[in-house]
Amino acid sequence: MDATEISFGILFLLQISTGVSVNGFLLLFYTHMVSTSQKFSSSDLILSHLALANTIALLTLGIPETMSVCGLRNFLNNVGCKILFYFYRVGRGLAICTTCLLSVFQAITISPGTARWAGAKVKLYKCILPSCILFWILNMLVEFDRVMNMTGPQNSSSLQSPMDYKYCSRLSLSAVTTLVYAVALSLQDLVFVGLMSTASGYMVFVLHRHHRRVQHLHKPSNSPRVMPEVIAAKRVIALVTLFVLLYGRQSVMLNIIMNMKEKSPLLLNSHMVFAHTFAALSPCLVIHSDRRMRMFWKRESAASNIDSSS
Image 1 (tube, one colour):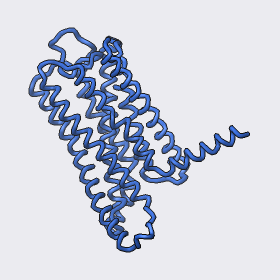
Image 2: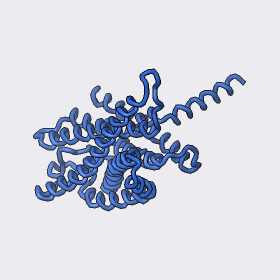
Image 3: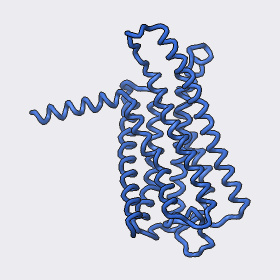
Image 4: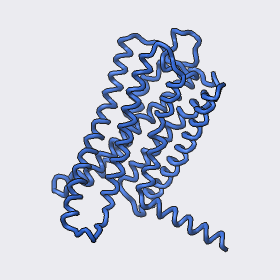
């Protein structure tokens, strides 16, 4: 194993451990908020579901990638590869769907308080939990067929693909079948990415209009109080922007890898690192923008200081 593989192994390990820890904290924090109904926000359920999806994606593919880069091979059989990639694909799909739901939810939340939007807000609040359940059913059904062509490590070159994962292989499919899978996957992703991008663009428009009104109503010396809805909207816009940028990078790099005549281990490892970036970074954005998190850490810090002094 050379120094490059060791470096990627350490990077994978740091990314996974940090991402799982932060997403686990978010999942417990928002689950506690929802269960106790203390300072409960309707978006908490969506954020906890996003943290769960990120954790699934990080664990199911991140740990085997780290083991593979560190030199371990042949630790999964055919069934193990199918199960691993099935739950990874489900977790990835849940992350896309949940991010889309979060952006649409926040766009409707900050929309003008007209009678039409008021009715939509009431209905949307009631649809959060059913939507999350529907996302699970949809992704578990859609991804079931796509992982059937995964198998354990193979020596035959006829079974290898440009996206060989070292510990698993993808069976060779006909050109027509490969094209159908690629088109179906791209259309599904583009629908959700398009929805979240549209919702984020609408939020930018609403926030810009709100900012102009606030500047007109308040004197420069009086700094207006930022509403929680505005803070939440900015957080969602940041999350969607990060997701869209990383999704675009992933699509371009994946297209390059699939059209390469010879595999590039450096490019493949870089692609896998970036594939987990959203799952690892998105909870950090959420924690930074949630005031309740800062209050939580202040209380914990104060409590620890009291304990140490006593």
